[in-house]
Image 1 (spheres, rainbow, N blue to C red):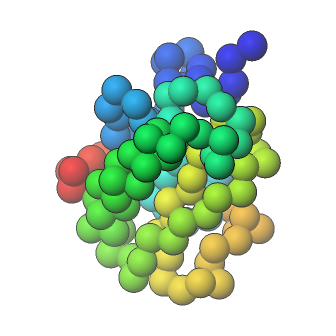
Image 2 (tube, rainbow, N blue to C red):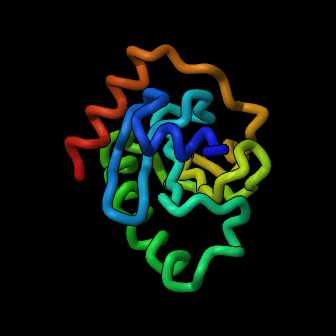
Length: 129
């Protein structure tokens, strides 16, 4: 059975897409730590990030870098933090979180976002790609 993220990639579940290429997909988290919180996933369905083939893993960072630079430009944040936990959905992913300081990198800060707020920040991020 396809993971939630595979269903998002296929368009079966709506998302606010930030960036996509033939191997990766980036979209906004619906429970962001801060506005602009983006998930970067490989299109290849695999559970654990560190089980990814080396070439797939190596390509994720340059792809995530494009998204992170756009997130930083759109939000004006001090940094874009990176989290890899891997427990929420059984599909490898990294979190790009706009932050002002390390203390903000905590899932305890995550809150549901309004769809209209996600659309607005998504547009703003995509303007910087």
